[in-house]
Length: 158
Image (cartoon, rainbow, N blue to C red; front, side):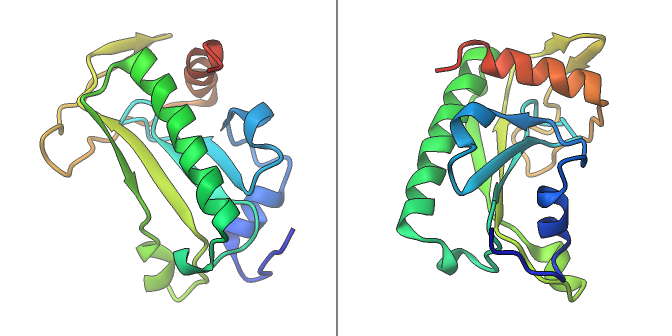
């Protein structure tokens, strides 16, 4: 795997003990992408889709990586629509925080369902009060809840 030793994302994704709750590992393991549930589930199912190899900007993605990203987004979107019934999905690539901090950027996308109906998972209840705006109201969750979300999304294993 191509890594940038100064990139904190490269460090995180290459550390097997980092504690991320990944999605669809059986599907993505042989691809250039890694899907991880965000700890902030203000948009239920919110995930990072990150290149396994260091890519500083989207113009560095290979044709294969673009195709794999498309397939992964389709897989995850279908699972989120089945489980959470959002009005639509948002996909964004914004690496502004790293760039502003003068750190190396690492290509990742954020996939977020928006306008989903109120849903309870474990002891947590999720809603989308910021729907219709750009605001995602924070809703931080622990590993146990992330694991339950993963189980729901992977249950249909489309």
